[in-house]
Length: 96
Image (cartoon, rainbow, N blue to C red; front, side, top):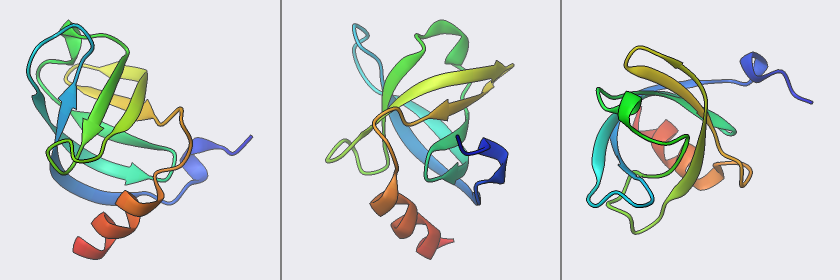
């Protein structure tokens, strides 16, 4: 098992959209940091929603499944259960 804090994180501070099963519409969040297996998110609506959701940086042309592993106020940490976030990380890292 890889220690999650050992993974290189990209400080991103970029907006993304979240979609929750059973809840209409999309909800904005700020992706503070990102690595290949997870991300740190900020949103004032986390305390209302489920532990699993979809996140998209491109208006849901593509999306990534996220699972919340911790919450603190308006922040949360997520992992990507489906595996790594390769292409998005490379694209977003180049923009920073």
